[in-house]
Image: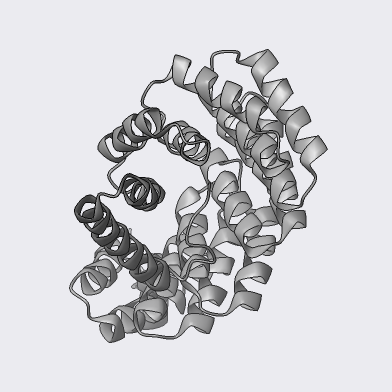
Length: 316
């Protein structure tokens, strides 16, 4: 019988087979290349990082990691608008990942454009995943911006996730307080105290509300209650010291204010009150020392606030 000859594959068939093998490899994002982009960012080479991430993005447009890396690289290179665009896209692509939302929030908080900050925070408050810490940060920053609508919306989402989140409850008090809705703020305090009767912060914030309304006796009682639960609570020490200073009880005021500076060395308010106290006692040297420390802390706080693009120097 004649031997059957095997057909040799055509060159075109071989090329198609090779293409089928190689194409997926070419299309897949290279972990090494992503790592190179991150490495370029770490060494401060924003231009190289942008180039690397853009190359990957050409065939991986829906990779949140690449969008996030590109956003951070653009920010490092000074393109804040482009950075925000890429980070927003990363958040949309990966709502269950906290990293891009955290990076976007950091970018927004550092922005010098108040309108951009507020608009960005409102967008992120709607799009961010179920991350209590991020929602709390969005609520707090929105409150400091005066955007109570966004703050309340973020808190509502947070409390739906974590109904007993005490920091969220305290932030809710502060939103109502800053909106001058003192009755609502006190009602929230009462609710927290009923739920967590040994939680000193609820008494501290209720005392603050009472003080704002001229009810100093009530404030003193609540500050003392807070200190009964936590003798080192710095705000209670400072604000109770302030009231006692005004009432002429210099000895107890000095004890409380000095204690505040020990447990919270950055508590510039306590140093300022000590200046007043020492002046009343006629101790000019001690007053001068307290004033020096007060000014140092205030200058440090101003510098940090400018660098962070913050909207408020103090939140008490």
